[in-house]
Length: 196
Length: 227
Image (cartoon, rainbow over all chains, first blue to last red; front, top):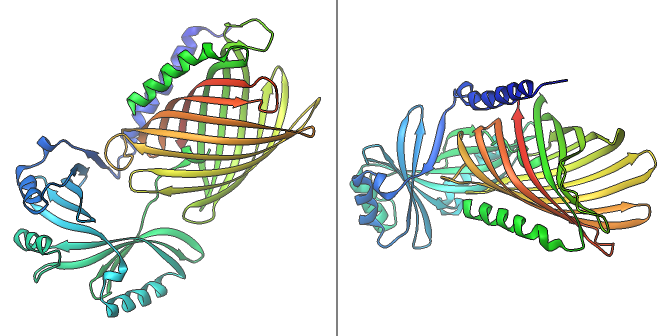
């Protein structure tokens, strides 16, 4: 007859293994989490509140092997903004939910032509306008609701694309004139627990 | 999410007595799910599941509150990712109950989409069950499910998440049809993307074609491993 001690050992072993496996899988460590207003650098709060009046702001922290950052997500005048800061509150970039139709027509044509060469079939699922530049110029652009001179404007596109008959999600970074900067395959999350 | 789980638990505790003359079962379903990548786009899911009953009341029979082992299922489902969101699969399940084996063939399709803070999933399953002395049973199942992080916008390693499922099962056996509805709520812990554990409650109701409906309440414990 198998004793209770034997069962206890098996259960203890399984629990120990469950909590130890995270330590083995940390080659790619990235974590994003909600943070409270008081944990946000004052400089970041000052920047956001000086541009977006009376807007509900959601703050997120992000930890990765390259460092920590803080992100503000908010909706203002019908647009969705995502503003990234470094740990000290220095602005890194601004992302605005947009559409490919906002790109100038020659840029759109060039981008569509490049995408057609890269993918046998594709469907754009999300487009974000990317603004990068000095703090005062980004602030001026946000207040004017248009990228002023000195802002590097790029488009970040998430698309479902087929290559060699295999469909995957990709992140495409494009210059404002439609020149593709990079195409990266997005590693999809493990969703086995929703399938079985 | 914690409040929702607590509310659900209290509902389960109080509703057990409210079933009145209906038949019901309450117990636990621990489940181990191991997924192995067998080739590019192909995965093999092996699932081991056992049911224990804590409390049982059959119609016109006395209440039984003795802990009872009911059955064990072992299944294998081979799936192929056919597009970015969709998978198809087929498999076999063997069930051991009262010393007798039941065999089930499974065909399934699933669609999983990642939204801003939710991951939503649709699953359609067709299965055929065969056992000695019973007519074959055919089931068509549709399940809608979703999960969301309890902190932040995505489920990262070492984070908790909430998961809901709602499933409808149409059953045909011996020229008779029935319906079963399932709903579940679970709290999950994502140790890594390939190692998750879930604790939840599942409610099932069937017997819609009969005078008295049958209710089931299960405490579910699921461990999902990917290799």
